[in-house]
Image 1: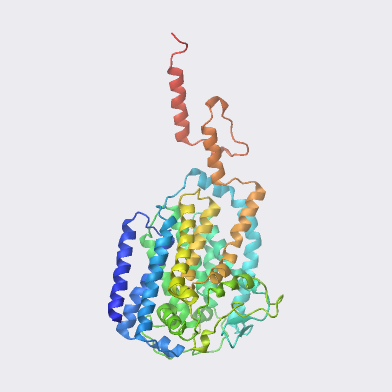
Image 2: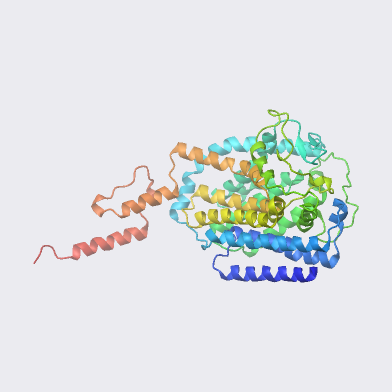
Length: 491
């Protein structure tokens, strides 16, 4: 029966993929593209591999054994989540991607350069200080020393210093991507982002440098008006995946040793276990979902009713200001560690929906994410695509890699508060410097275009480069010639 369900899930995935590919909406910029890839790899392809190779590692690690009914239910839950996401996402996101790039777009970026330099003068020093501090702690085994593990939830909590300063290095991801984008991806402009990627990988963290690489790749494709990755972009993706796996194998120790600064102790961390391809924890969202089905509500006798999302309100408060701050969500209706050892588990969107309210929760949670992201996509695809809108949207897209895998709003908010901070600061400086956005300039040109030729005046504050486009000038010249050719008077 399980094999039949696997085949059915694969057929549904292929059918949805075929429809999406022929819909005219398919592009790398659509949020459903990433979700379809996420679902296809973790809940269609990998389960087939797991079935063929009889994966057991996560079951032994988590000390649980799902029944065949649990495994079937997990596959059906993931498929329902994908269909719910797709249906709601295309309620708004049923528009093709268009590229609103013209001469005004590139002029806007040049005018925004002083505002960017003002922002960079603040964000780069803070970000690099945070990164260097993280590198030093990782080299000397002091990074984990400042973290304590809550015995009840197995969640690591910061006990020393300021958590905001420790995470400030994430600003370098968006700062570096903006710098490379403004200078048209020249080699010198890529150096700050490359430095962040290498050093961050050396600290053992993988999500931030993957998000940084994804943002850079999306901006590169956008500038070239490409809806799908080119051969060079696919090669870059392969390199990022290889780096992801390499860093995960030793938590960046090889990079630290290459620089000759590593003073950490040898750790086994289960490395002596011989794992089959794809059997490790990085891609085990199917087993994680099976654990949720195994525990909820069979053993917990309750759903979470999405109370874990209340952590959005407690997470921003530093523990120094709130010594009794709850570990994890402020309200927990059950503890999953009472039924096994789900260390490092990521629930995924359908998994968190199941934990929240069962089958209805899967439809609600995945549908809510699809609806919201489809709305955001439509606004961007049909919008003015100013510099700020473009970098913010590409940054959001890159953070969805983690969002789909973790399933909760807290992870997205935790990362994007630092990813988006430089963009908001840049926007503030631009407004202070009086720089008009591309959308404002286009509206001014359109308004001036509707005026008679005799009434048209240059818009105040517009540089010469933002005069009327050549096509508009030719149209005005044609209209003027036609007026001159008309007979005067009423003979």
